[in-house]
Image 1 (cartoon, one colour):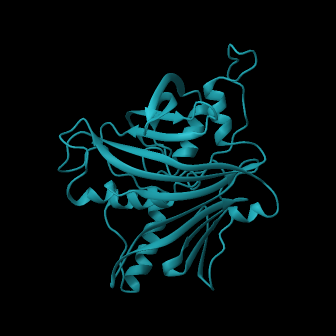
Image 2 (cartoon, one colour):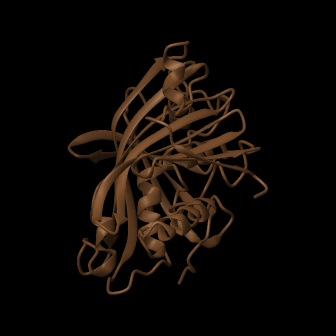
Image 3 (cartoon, helix red, strand yellow):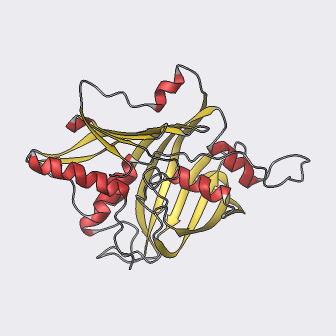
Length: 300
């Protein structure tokens, strides 16, 4: 059984939790509940990386599927805009739906993100469950990174957490909040860069043909070791835009459930925008009103 991981995002959640408790409220408890929230919030980082040609196809100059897929996730000098919906299900068990106290992970988790590379900048926006003394409500949350500073804005609490001195390759930027890290797009791109995914023919997703790449996630982004996790990455056969990410968390157990927890992330929208003065604002958080600002450094 994989032991619960305490990563950077969970530490931030705990910081907010202490303040919530002081104000007579409480955050959602439980490791997998935190992971579900984190997965919704922070499907946010698009990893930096230069386009590298990994092969030449039979068409005389046409890049292979891996190189095309890698380029689609991080085009130089442009902004990638994505909307994704993620959920977790059980595979190979008596039923696919998760039952018991972890059943909330069945619920779709929608996130929207904007990112660019060289230098790396990104913003993620989503709505997550916020539990207070008055009950549970769905509230908007945003995270961003740029020029060594990472921000977390919880609008219902009117709180902006700013952490400076964060490098692109640090755990704060690549926080582990699920099997593919805080953002499956970033993790998939890193796996493509490292040659950890290979072409595996075609497949069908929601009635549409896709090209499929497969591989194994060997270690969580935070460095936690686990059994190899099978990963599937489906792309549009013409544009090589992302269609679906799938990862099986082999070795992870959810009490009261049989089978392997499997995270599916469907890409609902994908577009590439020109990076200019107008679109650059999409990469930054713009709080409403005057939020309470908490400042930290990466050493905190």
